[in-house]
Amino acid sequence: MNAIDDGGPAYPIVTATEMSAGGIKFTTTPGMSLRDYFAAQALNGMLAHSTRYRPRPGANPVWHRAIADEAYEIADAMIDARKDAP
Image (cartoon, one colour):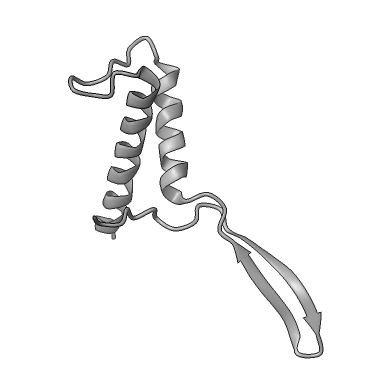
């Protein structure tokens, strides 16, 4: 099974964790992935027009799961499109 490209961190947080005579040591907390951020944005748009959204034929019969699955499909497409961008 191939690993899903999550696009890396969307909002990484860099913090100084230690100060010594040798300098400052920084650590990074990745935060949410870019894939999660894109999916959340897609989901937000889809829910803004919830009366227009209809799960595709063959989608998960649970409405909430179907719309979440499609939001991640959109996120994956956005990450792929970034690879082709200049």
